[in-house]
Length: 159
Image (cartoon, helix red, strand yellow):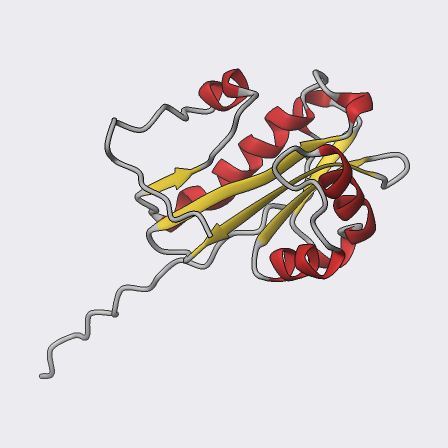
């Protein structure tokens, strides 16, 4: 009688959350790339985000195409009101970046919902860490478990 075969371990695919309405708010989070308003994302980041000022549209489109993107949308209108982007290998590491919330809705929970959705989506992958670099909103990220890295852990190569 042959030995039963043990299935080979599989790397879990990133789970795309269903659009959801977080915290009873009138908006939902989606990772559907077809729904993303690229013009608005580029406008926000290239004109109002200190880390991306002047970023060209082609450059932004390449960043979007190579990333897992999260949009926060007003439920009634479908209008994009927040954005976050994750660069990941889907196995060991992820980098959360380009988090932006429309100025009209800052402080209304949109950023919290975006970061919560990122964590929820990446959790099944078994990543070792999710990193980010930010000069502001430290409280937002701390509420979701982010901490400062130990001294000497990170290095960078300015280009």
